[in-house]
Amino acid sequence: MSLNVLLVEDQLSIAKNIADYMEAKGHTFDFATNGEQGLNLALTHHYDLILLDLNLPVMDGLEICRQLREKAERHIPILMLTARDSIEDKVTGFGVGADDYLTKPFQLQELEVRCLALSRRHLLQTSNTLTLGPLVIDRTQKKVSRAGQPLNLHSMGLKILTILAEAYPQVVSRSQLLQKIWGDEPTESDAMRSHIYQLRSVLDKPFSYPLIKTVHGVGFVLDIKDEQ
Image 1 (cartoon, rainbow, N blue to C red):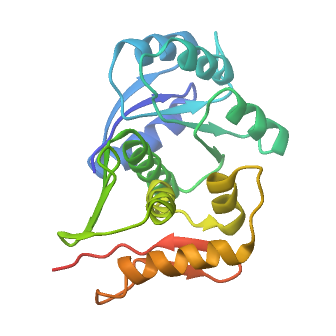
Image 2 (cartoon, rainbow, N blue to C red):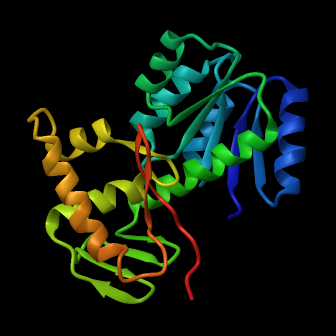
């Protein structure tokens, strides 16, 4: 996956290091060295992702993020880059609309992985059809297939599978799953266990390997591989 990225960073040495590494991986970059310029570029050009420093001249990253969420016609994934590492700073960043947060100094390899995961998650969340390897979920028609074979899932199984697909490649904890499905109305843990069992019996048992992987003590994640 090749990304078209806007990098808003006033420290030229950092911007050059990021661009040299990412462009060598096939990604393309636009640059802004102050907040006002970054906001104007973000509102007038199409980017897959914005890398946004927090401490910027003219307009800081928080204000850029806030205005983008108010003015942009579409949701542009924003990854904040900052030396501020307190929980309060991160909560503030997420509160104005940031999608992810990476604290300086960071490894360039991790930056690319974060960018790819964020962009992929955004595409999955905004498309009517989710495609992950052999798994295809049609949200509009509420249909699922694996390796081209239609699967007859009940509504709860479809809901659980969609949550796992939207989060991929992240692990979804049991508590997150319960919250997304039942909200503030608690349910018995046996009910969740039963729904997962029924989902696996349709999604995994007829095939050579299971798509749903249990991360013991944490939750569930999809294990996507190519199938012939």
